Each structure stands twice: as C-alpha cells, then as structure tokens.
Length: 251
Length: 329
Image (cartoon, rainbow over the protein chains, first blue to last red):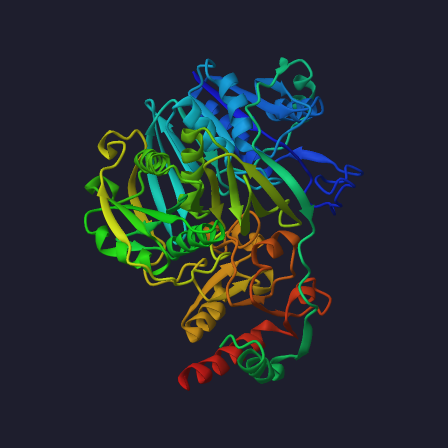
C-alpha cells in the first residue's frame, strides 16, 4: 500500500505564440489553451507506475489555481489518479515560496509515502516549489531525478549533473522532483475519461504564504540580428572559416 | 557595511567555473551598493581550502571553508544547513547561487530554511532600493520576465555563463568552519558519482558546441560531429530533443528549454531545423553557424552564418579546415 501525492501545475500550451497583455506584466489571455506541465505529467506517470508495482495504493493529484484547474485535475483522474484536491486561488503567484507554503499546509498530515513534482513548470521555469515544500515539511528530498527504484521503505534515484550522474539513496517518506527520461505520460483511455467523472475532487482555499517575488514586467526576447546564408555545399566551407576567424573572431 | 554572499561550487577538489561567476555577481552587487563585503562559502573534502585564494581573485573579501570527509560529494542537507547558517550569521543583503544542477537543488532549500523566496535561473540583476530586479527567461524562452524580489536576504540563482567571471583581486581572508549539520547523519546520501566520459568537456563549459539534429539520420553518424569537435579541441557535442528522445544520444546531451541551456562562443547547428524548444537552449550563443539542406529551415533565421547543403559533405570538409587552422595556432 503506497500513498503518493503528485503536485501538478496547469500551464499554457507552449507551442502557441504568446503575446504580452496590456499591463505588460502578464500574458494576453486571448486564445491561450492549457495543459498539465510536461514534467508534472512525468511525475504523474511515475506515481502510477510505483503504485502498480506495489500492488496497492493511491495517487492523489493536487493542483493550486483558479476554478479552471479542476479541468486539469479531471485530466489527471482520467489518466489514472485515484482522487484529486484543488487548492483554490484565483491568482497563481510567481513566488515559489508562497506556493510551497500552501502545498506544505495541505500535504503535512496526508500520510504520503512519496510526494512527487515535475522538476520545473514549463511556464515559470523556476524549479523551486518541490525542494522548498520538502524543506517546509522537513522531509528527505531528491530533485531532478531520471531513475527511481523504491522498496522496503527506501529509495534509490539518479540525478544528472553536468557531465556526471549521481546515485542518491534516501528513506521514505520523501519528496522527489522528476526530470525527463524516466517515464512518458500515458494517454487517458475512454474508460478512464468516463471513470474520472465519478472520482472524488475536493476543493478548498489555498493557504498561500506571503508573496515577495512578483512580476515587474514581461518582454519578448531580443531578436538576433538577421543572419546570412553564405553559400551552398562544401565549397562554402573556406569562406565560413574565414568569417569565423576574421569577422566573428571565434577561432 | 552590507554583506553579499556567494556559494562557490566545487567538484572533485576543484572550483567550478560557476563559482567565479557567483563571486563576480556578489562583487558587482556590493560595488553597486556603494561598498560591501563579499563572503564566499566553499564546502568539500579536506584539501579544498587550498582553492580558497582563487576566490579572492574574483573579489571575495572573506572565504569560509568547510572541510569534512563527508562532504567529498554533494550532501544536500549539510550544504543547505551550512549555507543558510552563513547567510544568517553574516546578515547578508543578498545571496548568489549557480543555477547549475547542484545549485538548482541547493538554492531553494536554503531559501525555504531562511523563510524567503528565490529568483531562479537569472541572467542579469540589479539592486533597486529595497528590491532586487532580476531577469529570467521563461515560457520556453519565449518571454523574458523581470522579477521584483523584496525582503532580505534576496536570494538569486544565476544561469551558468550569463554573468562572465571578472577578476578583481583582493587578498581574501580565509576562515575555517564546521558544517552546520553533520553529513554523517544526513538522510539523503549521494553514494556514487559516475563521470560521463572523463576527458569530455561539459556542454556548460565548452567554448564551442557542435550540435546535431534529426538531419544526422542515425546515431552512428554522430561520429562526424565527434571528429569535428576533436578538431576544434575545445568543443563538446550536443543534440536536439528529437535525437535524445529517440535514444541516439544520452538525455544529458539535450540542448533546449527542457535540457541544457548554453551560451558558448560558437554554436554549430548541424542538421537541426530550429524548433522553438531547441532555440530556447542556445539562442544566447555568441556566434551561431547552421548547416541544413532546407534553405527555409527556421535555424537560418537566427544563425549568423548559414550553409545550405548536405551536411555529410560539408561537415568532413569543415573538420579538415578546422584542423588546418588549429595546426597553425
């Protein structure tokens, strides 16, 4: 019997073209579509696989945000989560510590063996909430793992560094954040989608911490100066090398 | 006088390049604040103290060295407890960590222990009165967010390579200290560290990156890129997500928003079409070269120099030319 919490974030679909809103601090909401953040999807898959391996248990999907995130949670239920908890907050601050505070308050007495996160949300790209939540709960934590083995109340994980891989051992309960390469998110089946409608989804107010990190402004990244095609085929190679030497001065 | 803290990352008894970058950032912050002391912290196995003076070259006034046999590898709990204790006892105005694999794990832990937030993966920053403004690429690199961080200490993790290490020599005072938590009692233990090819340059540190996409047609053809990298002598080989997803190259070689984000002097995109997610990982390279058979490939829009054609002819020719250049240097 393994009890696992998976903390998910609802993010805009990243393939879309983004525009900045009139306040210059937020995205223009027109035309945005939402999905589960990639890494959080992998975390959900890891949770489901661990429960399947253990033979029994539950996967609880947790999401903080406005009412719209209930759709995200239904998706997680359709994919296979047992039940869901919506921490309601009309704003989702950029401040990871404020969010970790709310999650820790919810997770504290949950009796979870594992609490899983994606290694970062694809929108804010900060990767702070998982490790911060672990510290607030005073639980062992390993971040950005690419391999996991759990048994007898302990776990082994791999973490990729620049040019090296760490093997990390830890006792349960623990907090883990999931990198890619460990699991691909399964698709919801039609049966899963039907079943999800009847699975429990509890909504309660999020107890956000104090917000001290806010968005001052948003900008589009500076364009690189237009490049040039210097030629076709291998005959252009000497000219390329000359330019790299004399113009770009990178050789 | 305010104090500015810098975490100096080390591995295998040596300081990493990002250590000089965090110290440089702390020095810049101190100077911008009208003066202040830079306190650097380095943890490691006995012997790491010999490296302390190197941090003085980049502007550290005080280097706290914590030597312990249990700190030969990263020990997240002992590192976090020690960094939090040093920041607190110094009353630091701000603290700088690298947004490296280690720093991305450590910095949020330290922040939570101190009860403050963290501006993560920052490319530039400035102090503005009681606030710290930090720029951070988000939304797969499509948006640059300027963040306002209030409160003290203001903790920041810096994108590797974003702030160039700059020498500003001082004779640093070296102080030895004990870890604030016993590494021997840690719950989380790094039991092994395997190197991904000892002699290989890391993507984050290599001045030149030779990167391949689906245009290589198969894993065996990456030999062409390895030969080119060897000809440069200071190059690492990277890949696109499509390539690592298909298992042609290890996931750790992936360059892009969800993989490594790099800023080399020279980036060669070979057989790479230029998907947004890949561009987010390399668009800050100083010079970009693209080779692709499709003249309309999006990579040509951001490449400084492009060659249209068959990379299986062009890359070997380039390898020969680079060999000639290197032989003459």
